[in-house]
Length: 257
Image (cartoon, rainbow, N blue to C red; front, side):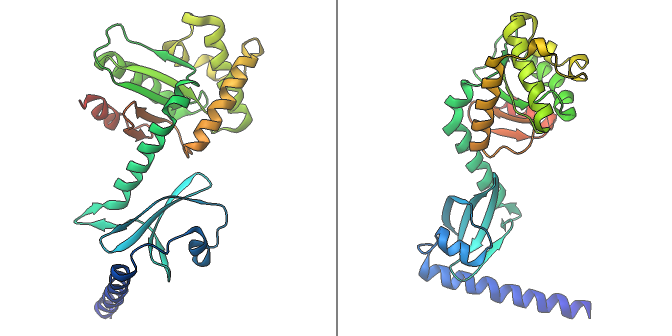
């Protein structure tokens, strides 16, 4: 019975894919639009980031509430999910390209909202690492110390961008971190930021300043444009990135020429 079910499912899948390929070869992707997508998917607030013909089918990448969602199909139906070809996740590669472009488009704005930066004693590379983090993020805290070691090892400048995923309490600590750097200057850099003691207590009101509040508000605006919904997040100035506290992957990224 199990074998029969598998064969039946395979036949249905092949017929379905064949229909997509036959249709797309003739119709291409010219009829893909927001209105068309709305006829199939119960969403109203979204934007199309990119669309292209891919191996005979239409690939559409949309942004829904800062989430990037891939769609495949045509004007008659759409499938949401990842597309694989030759054991390779084609969708993942495309989303990587999309995020890379989004970073490069917003790089100038990001440079204007850097809370502080760390420059190792010996700069060995033109590569710059942008780290999105916040004081109340435990994964970010664990990554912070490793980032400094990697920066020292590869001679890479690190730019810290503060964005909270912990609501108003987290945002207040982000403001405190920015203001500590403004007020203490060289006495509060990446090494001091990585210390746990000040992160574990309520925000110190003497380190809450208007300049810091303005900076974090502007950082939130840029992060929203970039669809950032999780930290830690690391980008290099070329747009390549690592999402999460994946330190081995981050080191590989910093090794690349």
